[in-house]
Image 1 (cartoon, rainbow, N blue to C red):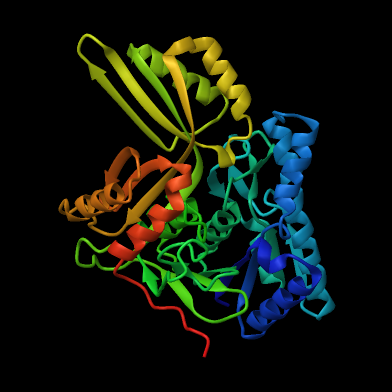
Image 2: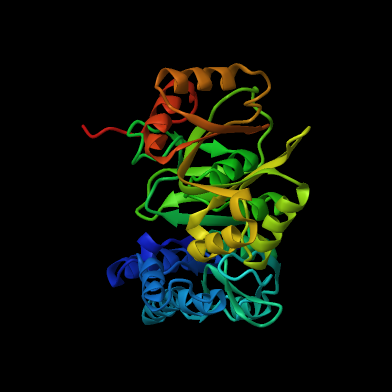
Length: 406
C-alpha cells in the first residue's frame, strides 16, 4: 500500500482532546487504504517547560543531559496517540527516534540526521499497524540520545518519508500553510499556494517557523512533496520542485530575533581560527560569517549566532573574553529581516528599494548580506517588526488573500 507520513506539531497535540482529534484524522487516513506513519511533537509548551526546569538546576546544563530531558516530551505524545488509536480498534505502535532508526551526528541539542534505518517501522507497517514516531530526536553513532534543534520534528517526518519512499509528507500545525510573513506581525499576510524547495528553505533559515530548513533539504534531495496544512482543515501550501518563475519576485519576508554578533577586530587570521575552535568545542553553529583582511590593520571578522539553540551563551561569552580579551566584542539585542524570492538579486532593484524603505523609516542597518534567493538585513531587535511590515507592504507580490469574516 502507498505510505503517507503525517507530522503533528505541539499545538495539534496540546491536550487529550486534541490528541483524540488527531487520532480520528489518522484513523481516517488508515481506513482510506494508506499505510500511515505519524510523527509527533511534544504537547504544547512541554519542551519550553522542560528547558526552564533544567535552567533552575544549572545555568549551563550539560548538553547530553539536556537531550535526555528534552526528548521525553515527544515520548509522552507518541504513547498517548498510540493508546488513542488502539482504543479505536486501529492497531498502532509507538517508537522513539532511536527505535525508528534515526541516526544522527553527536552535536547534542542541535544534531543533524546522517542516516535513517527504518527496519522496525517497515516491519510494523507490514503487520498493518500505524506507526507513531517521537519527533525531534534520534541516536548518535555513540548510542547517545540526541535532539535536532528547533523544528526537528519536521526533519524527522521528511527524513522518514524519504527513507520509506512515501508518496507524500503532510505537516500539520495551527496555521493553514505558509504565509508571506508571520500573520501575528503582518495582519494582511497572504497564504502561498505553492513554493519551490529553494524558496521554502531560505524562508525557514531566515526565521519562518512553519517548516524546518533541514526538512526541506531532505525533501528536495528525494523529490518529496510537502503539504503544510492546519490540523483543523482548510487550505494548504505545497512545497515541491517548480520551474523557475520570472526572476525578481519577492514571495515573503521572514525575521529572527535573539541574535548576537560576535566581532573580532584588527587581528590576524589566527584570532578567527581561535574563535571557531572554541565554538566547535561547544558544538555551536554560526549563521553568517564574514572575514576581511585590511592592509596595515589586519583581519576583521563578524559571526552571527542564534541564541535559540545556544543554551550556554553566558559561559561561552566568558570563555571567549578570557581567551581573546579585547580582540572580541559582542553585540546583543540584534534581529534580522530577510526578503525571499527566486532571482531576487538578478538586478539591484529589490536591494535598492529595500534599503530606501529602511532609510526612510530611520532603521539603522547593521549589516547586509545577499544570495540568489535572499536579501537580509541585521537591525536592532526593536526595529524588526516594523521593518517586516513595511518591506512586506512594499515588496511582496505573491500570495492568496486570507478569507475575511462576513
